[in-house]
Image (cartoon, rainbow, N blue to C red; front, side, top):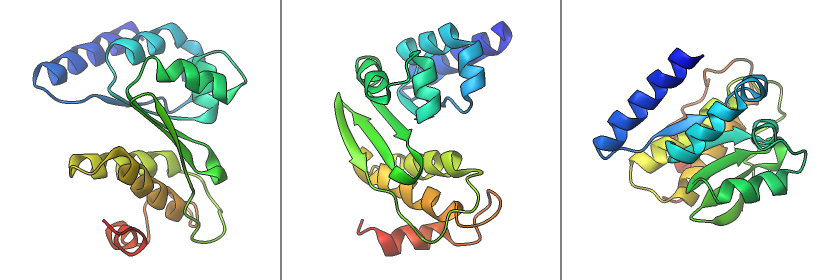
Amino acid sequence: AEIAKNAFIKAAETAKNAGKKVALSLSDSFCVSRHRESFIELVEDYIDILFANEDEITTLYKTSNLNLAIEKLKKKCELAAITIGKHGSILISNGKEISIDPFIFGKAIDTTGAGDLYAGGFLKGLSEGLNPLISAKIGSICAGQIVTQLGSRSNTNLINLVKSNLQV
């Protein structure tokens, strides 16, 4: 675990020295719980953009209260997206909290990959110069589609889906 943490820190420092942003997805509440102090250090010192779901962020801040976890996160991270399942997501941008409605494209049958597609859509938006709010909506569209099918590879062209559901 220490080798992985040091490798991450070296990569993050290299990215920052090159003027790039560093994004991290917490990905697994068990892992967060097991390496909590390391994750807190990474979030506070190295991460520009954080992705987490409700369980992961409450585990990070050792609370069952999502609002309390978000208040703590707002003081430590400039840009974050917390996914809250069928309720959409919460964007944290420059100390502000913005609710992002979910995009529903049918019955949710498999959540595999939803967080990853949300992050991918969000980062695609940011990489194209879009603001965090629009980027979060792109993430929400991608996640909203992937839960309607089995597996984590979209059967639908996500770029077309975004274009038809968002006026960018």
